[in-house]
Amino acid sequence: MEIIKNRLRHYGEALADTDMIEESLVVIVPDTNPDALQIIGSKASLYVQEKSCAQGLLKITGSASCQISYLSTDGKEPYIVTASIPFSMSKEVAGMAADDKMLTELRLLNVSAAMVNPRKLSLRIQIQAFEQVYKCQVVEYAENVVSTSDEGVNCRCENKSFKTITDIVEKRVVFNDEIRLSGQQPNGNSVMLRNEAVWVSEDVKILPNKIMIRGRIDTIVTTMDENGCFSGKNKYAVPFSQIVECDGVNSDDEVEIVYSPAREDVEIFTSSDGVTTMSFAFAAVTSCIVKRKVMLVAVNDIYSTKWNTQNKKACATTCLAQEPKCMKTPVKETVALEGGADRILDISVVGEVSSIGKNESTVGANFYIMVIYQETDGTVLTTSKKVYAESMCKEPFRTNGACVPSCSEPSAIISGDGEATVTFEGIFVCMESSQGPIEMISDCSIDKTTAKTSNIKASLVIKAVEKNETVWEIAKAYNTTPSVIASANKLNANDEIAAGRLILIPFVNR
Image 1 (cartoon, one colour):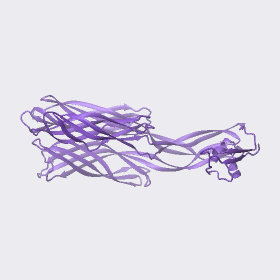
Image 2 (cartoon, rainbow, N blue to C red):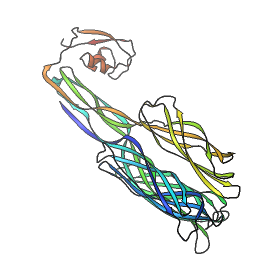
Image 3 (cartoon, rainbow, N blue to C red):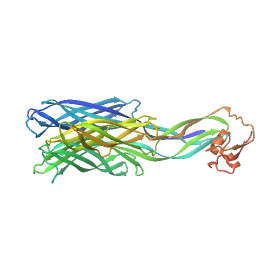
Image 4 (tube, helix red, strand yellow):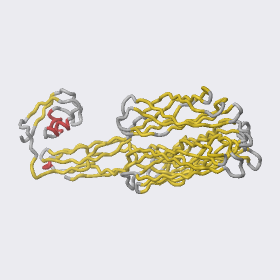
């Protein structure tokens, strides 16, 4: 007997994990700036310098470009002091081989500032790293069997069609642009209270060995003017395009795009010709996950009517078409405000990714709330708070997975002296491990030292077919061939047989 083999190389997700990076710094107010009386707020943007995973060791280094807005002791005019906080993370990823791929996404969850004294301000950032490991799998499988008549070998081959991950490629994209502002837009002296950016794919085209991506970066900027008055919130759509080289990708493939922001700098200034200009400096690691519909001929089963056989199995990983579970829960939280608050100006909420364990029936996540509000004297201030929310699932999770939280548009009202009530709907998008096994035969051996024996002595058996039983399974169980049973009952070897039907099982040379 000769086994004709083939090989399939693909990727399967092995695990997902999260890590928290927390760094702090004391910022000195320079002599050129007046002493601080009260902190208005703080913002930060991440700059990722290195992100690598070699020989199972994950390394991430970078810095957070931070800005603290404060009111001085000599008046109500806002001042800004800047600082850069370096961060780094290093961890061993157990069981990760050289050919495996890891995708890592960084999220800036929170930045907060506090006064140590009028000359010193403390700054703290919290960053989350969400990691996914994709194991490289090389599966050797049998696609045909050649045997002689004296071996009595029966082989079942099937056409397998399934979707799997064939490649994962990453490319860093850097994008710089400027927009000239007019009208009621911020001016060159405006102070940014916060900014956020979301990368969106609009069009993905697959060409031979390359992927073309067109999209936009939705940027929201919240500012106040040079007098400390709230300017408002403005949204800008910044277009981008890039080409990712990917050997072997073809037009029939499906590509999932994942962006991991590496830099998000926004600056407002007055140009040399006196026009207010907003500059953008964006960078992101673009990960392209290539999914392909694979067609192959594979041997599912081998057995002999004359000799004992021993099959070895192989498994390929398929991407199941599994919709993420989405659960919602109302969140209502009281946030403390300093001084006499007059009105709420803006609210933002960022969720922290969490892991889901097998058989868990509850999902939850931390949400970081930031409120921008105005005091009765017109002063603009910010405050933040971390809250936890959870939701029950209709049924337990079958596998491990991850919960990616988001929220509906938050709202807030001043509910009492020195406090506000923030309400929003927490949304939990839960993704189970979306891979399933496709079993095939990788090898088979025949033991010719002793002939195969059977306890069945009759030359003819009448059997009632059980539910979901096939001709192949009956033939294997009774040590005969599918063609003998099919011929005796005027069936095809692949026919489905109704449960309870009586069939004849003849035996030859008993």
